[in-house]
Length: 301
Ligand code: 3HC
Image 1: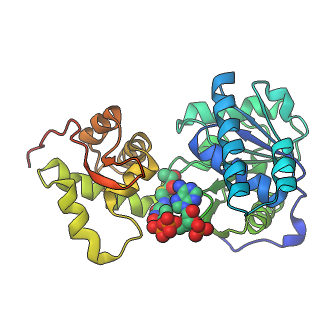
Image 2 (image 1 turned 90 degrees about the horizontal axis):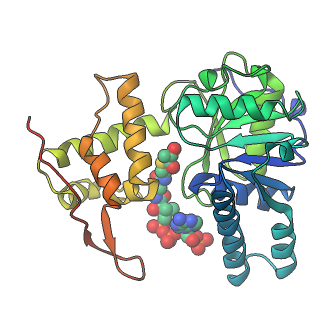
């Protein structure tokens, strides 16, 4: 893809809409609040999910205040700027709407098509998809030129990167808004091609997929971690899988495998482990004590 377009084309972001109130969505909703200091409205399938997301944001604001990172005035201001809703009509005056709903093409297409009925044709739509085609996500949009990929990494507060994904339809004003918004969030934005996994997840899917291949054939996960230690990754493969979440990790591997069956490994065991919970057993302070047993079956070959 070509380089970043002129910053002067960027549209003003005065209200942010967040579709999805899960782990990623709540983390970046907080970042938008803190760095843009504009109203943020967050929605999900039902009130319980919305409340959980808003509750997470309130808790994190409190932690920031307790650590002295923000004053009590700012904490109060941020709390007042965030609202939860189950009614997408409340997105009407958002000029930036970003989604992090379930990583399934049909769901993302429908959720955008629905919200498009309420927002201005000028509003930018951004997707936090990690492995789906951004162009396909926009297939049901009336104005696909206002859709851009905007992929965060967890933990959002500390990971410095956003992958910005331009489709063949994305116009310069949308891309420029994405780049300027990323800078306001104090992240380094790179423009990547619209190809499964973009850059980072593609490499991580390879790494974690090969780690699972070894585990599935009888190498204990503790040995995989020990073997990888000299590479100096910021996190051992097991900790990275736990951080991303085993369900999300398994889904990312599946998506890559579906796109390139000969190049990416799909681990049935990872799905079973995801049902079971987490890979790592931790003490009350979060320190790793050992590995959960899970439901590992050794795969032949
Ligand atoms: N949430 C918020 N902040 C966190 C955090 C979390 N979950 N975990 C750590 N932090 C903060 C700490 O508060 C600390 O901040 P401070 O210095 O201001 O106090 C800072 O991060 C450093 O933390 P620590 O000193 O405790 O820990 P480390 O130095 O070990 O760093 C790490 C922790 C930054 C998480 C590091 O281990 C790391 O970079 N890990 C790799 C993470 C990664 O690869 N993420 C990408 C996953 S893939 C993805 O998200 C894509 C998706 O589509 C699947």
